[in-house]
Image 1 (cartoon, rainbow, N blue to C red):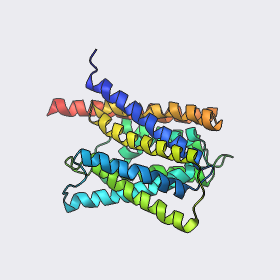
Image 2 (cartoon, helix red, strand yellow):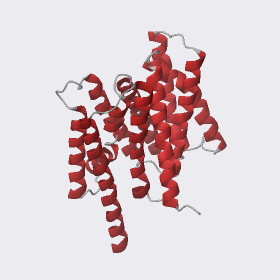
Image 3 (cartoon, rainbow, N blue to C red):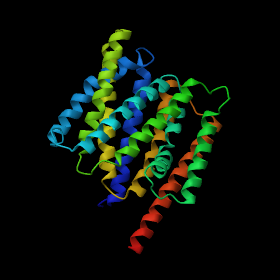
Image 4 (cartoon, rainbow, N blue to C red):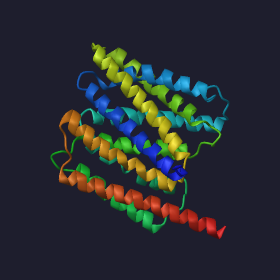
Length: 295
């Protein structure tokens, strides 16, 4: 049976989320022994050449882009750097499922950012979904509660940084290859990890840890590639909600590797965020169909 573009795109998105969460789980495991900066540097030793090689094969490495697109690429790279540092720092101290649950608010925050700064039309239903999604995030982090600390704040900052990254990516011309963008974003992270590791000191690593780093690098590279493929197969409003499958893997890996299980409040907040995100995608699909019929 031949898969439709939508189904194929959904499968690719689910694989992408498995890859990203696998990377997160492996990096969290490494942070029990080495610093965040050293982990980023070691992963970059594998992922940057791997991305460069794939981009070269796809003729996406040596390209010409205009000044406007370069500004977007550079701004995106710095947003990616900030997001990586605060996210991985928070990840090193927070349960995997909890920080993954907070990140599920991204589709809502990107919609809000685009409406406020880019003037995109967002109706009252999607604004309501955004508000409800934020309530879900508050339930997860519980300000003033026992589990609320500076790392929960860093997780929120990570959402803000990734929101900026994803929103400004929409400003890129479609002629700019996604692999080129991913490669140029990976370089500053790799360099920052190397510079900070040189100042903070190198911790000895075993052969097994090197193997974990290699697998994590391959996983995050696959995550980027499958995410790009997913968004180019099928309708975005159909494919994008499958990013929420990442929560399933986060709960599973969190339990198997670290013995963590989210409590009832975290699960409730996560459910609210996911339902509101799916609803926002649905409303976007309805709006696009209405615009198409009236054109």
